Image (tube, rainbow, N blue to C red):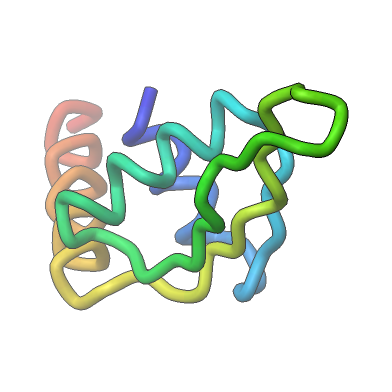
Length: 81
């Protein structure tokens, strides 16, 4: 699932705002793995006592993230031959 997001970010125009909570969680995982640079605001409790997550911003793929995408692309290409 995280790899699908990494692939999508690899072909997207960055920076990219992300509001979906599931995607923000995946982005957080990719950032922790050192595959992307991102700004992810902390979760907070609003005045109505509801937990809120503001939009995150995927800023860039790291060199490590680009290498991983290249490796996966090469593996996929070799599987098709």
